[in-house]
Image 1 (cartoon, rainbow, N blue to C red):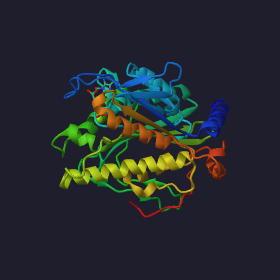
Image 2 (tube, rainbow, N blue to C red):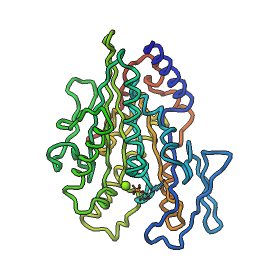
Image 3 (cartoon, rainbow, N blue to C red):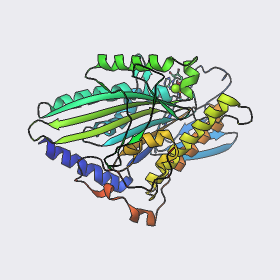
Image 4 (cartoon, rainbow, N blue to C red):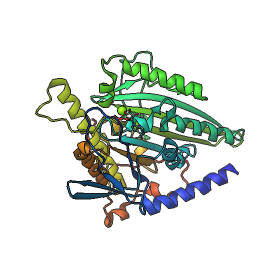
Amino acid sequence: KYKREMNLRKRCHDELVRLRGNIRVFCRVRPVGQEAGSSGSRSIVTFNPDDDALLHLANKGKLMTFELDKVFPPQTTQEEVFQEVQSLITSCIDGYNVCIFAYGQTGAGKTYTMEGVADNPGINQRALQLLFAEVSEKAPDWEFRITVSMVEIYNETLRNLLGDNPSERLEIKMCPDGSGQLYVPGLTEISVQSVEDINRVFNLGYVNRATACTNLNEHSSRSHALLIVTVAGVNTTTGHRTSGKLNLVDLAGSERISRSGAEGCRLREAQCINKSLAALGDVIHALRSRQPHVPFRNSRLTYLLQDSLSGDSKTLMMVQVSPLDSNMSESVCSLKFAQRVRSVELGPASATRRPADCSPSSASPTHDSVELDSPP
Ligand code: ADP
Ligand code: MG
């Protein structure tokens, strides 16, 4: 019965992919709060009651309109955001790889959306709770093992946040079996089964992230934080196996740092952030417009996530925006990034669709054969 249901879900998904592609770009606008240094600043964002894909920025008589796949106005709750991403999250039980990114300038609400706050958790914790609930419903026909890893990417180096040595650097390697799969030797994976397990693991990651840096807030706005969840299942009667991966990514702040003002450490950080965010935008744009070459190897972030971005994987980019006029230029930059990522080149590109997009029977995610450029 489960297999039939799974096939049906897969077919529905493939139909959706055929119609709309498997990359979504959403925008969440944070509420006006008591931000430091924003006295006198006001909201310049307006929404279209008839079309939840449109967002308008009005400033000094100028009106700019942006189109996304969906826009969440400031009053949207954590539950409401989660409802929109639920089906994406549960699809990793069926063997899909999923990436959810929070993008935007520092203070725009990336961490609020992904981690949330103590009494109002974000996508990360809700996702694991939902996975626990879903897999327990499939017992005893299926047995699942859910593991989590936490990784930070700072200045193009990977740090294992759940290991014994938080300053240990990790490398990304290609599996020697010729499958094209990547792996990270030494990456700690912890099996989780309950909310208590999740909280324990999140705390360990948090403490490890805080060690080796003097100001956690500053540091976290300049590094990418990844929560990697793997869901491996086995059918207890047939032995059939599935494996899916969910990558939940709180990206480094996208704000432009003036190159003229920055020196040494700050300049290097700014260059690394620019490079990796630009690489991510290029990869998603290339995938969404079905270009034959996808430049995964231009940054550690896209290289690490290659398996989870290619083939029949699903990606959601949540662009976080501040509504304040004082943040107007950064908001415009973030929304332009969103538009660029979203834009689909029509025409011959659709004829070069990768086979993975039309193979409903493939049980596990396939990996497209892309031309590779030099490693990052
Ligand atoms: P970022 O991670 O992008 O730098 P944060 O998530 O830390 O931004 O958000 C900055 C501040 O605004 C935090 O205090 C956060 O709790 C608050 N905040 C962000 N988004 C919301 C929201 N949708 N509702 C309530 N508070 C929010
Ligand atoms: Mg943050």
